[in-house]
Image (tube, rainbow, N blue to C red):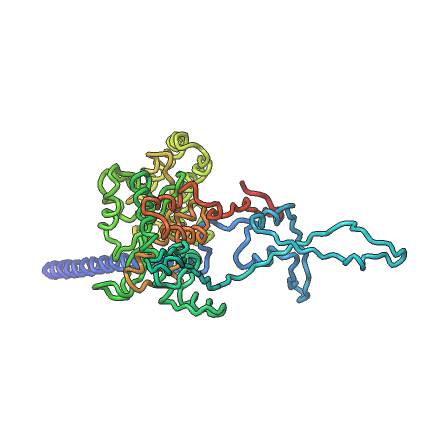
Length: 552
């Protein structure tokens, strides 16, 4: 009996040991499964990053997917050529002729704004004789051949001679002589060699054509003009301080006092000699401008040493009534006083979902959650294209009736979708939910845009320039650049030729009073006609068959 009890006790001890071992194995298995799940999630996350980086580096920058017949960057020469040579599978070369249907009158439209210089080729009267009958030949017809001639910029020195006149009788009588001076325009900069045309040329080359001053200085040497970068910089700084600052202040005042929709954006700029900052640190160029549906577009750039909220607050505090602020997701605009209503950018939503779609293999895209989210956004943009030509009041009604229900369904989908927060889709969904209130504000007014593209397109001109000249030397130079960019972009938006307008301002401003400066504003209706840019012909769109059509 005792042996039986001992056997039972041994079995119980072994059972306890096995139970403990099983528990340890179960715990280890759970830990391993957790590690596997985490590892798989991490691998998937890195795979998404890899695909996204590859798409950004090697894929198209546009979010639009390729369309049949669309001309790509690398084959546009072949696409527009009359014929191309291709290599066949048999290693033989074959020439293929491409026929393009040309629309009559297109070339005349393209160059309709250019002056025409006529050169006639005639036979001398004594040579225009029939070799058979000896009679004089008469003109049967004339053929007109046109070619485009481009004359490079020419530099010259203008020597102004001012005569003074004195009375001889006064001189002979020994009394104080009467001296008269011939009137002449006031100089742009006293004691300087600068002219309005030269400074306007420099401004346009740097702020419109994005040419750094050192490169412009080198280019001018080939035309015999030895003009240092420092001299050109001084001319621009002094001219801006004397004549352009008032125009800038008027643009800013008009923007903040006459408009209730303002688009905003910002981008980095490097300033080498910023007080209390290392040269490598980033400063910021802020942009504020009118919306799309205005008669007088206005653009204001402001330079600041940081991207802090206080700079946005400082700019908008002069707007007493408040306004809609069309912006991206930056929270500086979300923390403005209540009289300012931030309006989000749906294009940023589309970008996040487009990036999430890029990380999915092609075979898995159709029917994916990412495609479902992107479909909501595309449906909203499709409707917006249909509403584009409506009046703001009618657009407001149509948006509420047709677009708003899709947006509500989209946010409900985003709230309920099951997705990992750190995945590409998770980040897209997180952005949408975080920006929901601001994205829905677009439905408050029919004048509002679904995207902040208008400000991003405008700030791009500064970004292009920054890529060339890379940095500003001092804060004063950066502030001057902000003011000049503001005037240049406002002039362009109002249909002015930047060079002719700046030249006219610099020629006129030294010779008028302060009260007459309003006549130099970019929106002044009585500006000379030559200050206005020539109207371009309607853009031509080539269809898949090569036929050119006019887009109206």
